[in-house]
Length: 109
Ligand code: HEC
Ligand code: HEC
Ligand code: HEC
Figure: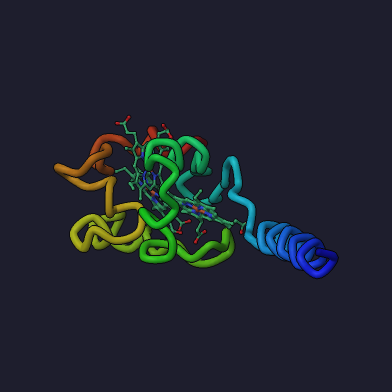
């Protein structure tokens, strides 16, 4: 009996440690650019993705706010065409507004 209790306690503790080791999703991330700051509402994007982190991680972005976004080349046309980075969704005909005429949706001076 004591053996089982020990195993149970060990399993619960291990589970807790694994949860702690998981990186915490940020609420918002601010990217500063010469065009004006871009606030990325991470929480809103997560809920629109129905909490599926794999929609973006790691195929579009690593879980690091300091990693390069790779979205700025030729004023977003490169990523919009390749459907990479933010351009995976923010692209003409995509699920979200593209850059054309919508600079101020993202850039705030
Ligand atoms: C719509 C896309 C998207 C979804 C969905 C998403 N993320 Fe992110 N996440 C990002 C972007 C963009 C960054 C910043 C990447 C960069 O700066 O290169 C980021 C960064 C992060 C970071 C790093 C924060 C830091 O301080 O460095 C963590 C941790 C993270 N995400 C966790 C999660 C978790 C957990 C989920 C699921 C609950 C999730 N993300 C879902 C887009 C997303
Ligand atoms: C998985 C798809 C997806 C990716 C990747 C994505 N977005 Fe979005 N984003 C959306 C959707 C969907 C909306 C809501 C669009 C609408 O209302 O027309 C949105 C809305 C926004 C908004 C408006 C404010 C808000 O959150 O409602 C901003 C700003 C924005 N995105 C910036 C970004 C930036 C910057 C990136 C890259 C770091 C990015 N998004 C990557 C899907 C995405
Ligand atoms: C979906 C959000 C979004 C939209 C819409 C958008 N941008 Fe951006 N923009 C960003 C993000 C995020 C970055 C940073 C990208 C990176 O680091 O790769 C950026 C970077 C830039 C840069 C590089 C600035 C620097 O400091 O190097 C320029 C220039 C730029 N955008 C111009 C524009 C113009 C002009 C428009 C409208 C035609 C526009 N952007 C529309 C999100 C957006």
